[in-house]
Amino acid sequence: MTAPYDPNDREKVVAKLPSELRKELKVRAAELGKDIQDAVTEGVEAWRKSKGLAVVDTSGGTSFATYLPAGLYGTLKKDCTARKISYNQGIAQSIRLWIDNNPSPRPKPPRVTGARRVIFGNQKGGVGKTSVSAGVAQALAESGHRTLLIDFDPQGHLTKQLGYDLLGIDDPSLAKHMLGEAKGELNELLVPIKGGDFEDHLWLLPACKDAFLLDAKLATSRSVRIKETALEKALEPLEQLFDYIVVDCPPSLGYAMDTALYYCRTREGEEDGTSGIVIPVLAEDSSADAYDMLYDQIQDLIEDLNIGIALLGFVVNMYDSRKGYVATSSLDEWNHIGDPPVLAVIPELKDQREAVRVKKPLLVHAPYGDQADVMRTVARRISA
Image 1: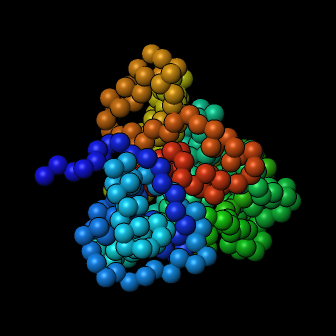
Image 2: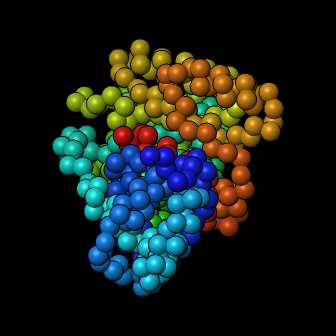
């Protein structure tokens, strides 16, 4: 029998849902590696065949948006009218039914290495390392993972874009902890990032301008190994507190970047691909040149230190096919590499720029936009 709608012809639908149900849907969809729109579609299809479902408490509901096949959306509204319930109740019951019919997979054995470590790096500036690392960290936290987002760039764009102040130049900082110059505990510097469905799961370690001096101080350190291990040693006390530690790296190939690459290496007993580097790029030639230099740096570390560093994939940022052959042919070349794969393509839209302007996280400012959905796709692929 042919479905009475085209699954590729979707339209945006908006409902009012209680925050806990909305969060539960996002967590379960992430656990099962399923797009939210597909989960809701399956839930609506199952709801239409079910009878006698319990009423879902939708009091205090807030806006939730997704995409349903156009024909299914119209049928859902008619069914709600026939059952004498509100459209919001119909959507809520459908989501509740899908969650109940798709139980959480059994938890994986605990990792001996603590948090999974994902760094976002590229020697070229302006490719969106900050926006992509922030968006993916929000998506990981939204899925129920305790996530720490680290601004490791002395320019502090991540910290400022999220509406926080940089640490004072004379205050304790990540750089000072890396160099053994700080008093107190590093976790005292963490600040919670509020808002959205990731609240209580996402923290920020703000930047400090003293990180501009980090390369020079690492270069003159008397310790042979501090150049590579400094970041790991500083962050080690935090690893048991988080499921993911996400690092927004500086646009450089210096010693600081070496410490980040060493930090995301595959540790003994850790499955390959558990941690690693995500490389944001643009669909143009200069990003490819920058990647070549980064790749050489990674290979040098692998050979010099006899370690493994997983290249988790590219994220092609700010893509606009209307830019013509330069953009489309470049995207083809990124896809042609194959290993590492292209994890996702982020369209050139206003959402992220607006979020930066108003100093809000993307998944708070535009949680149902295309860019937010791509961040969730990247998070789902690197956490699989």
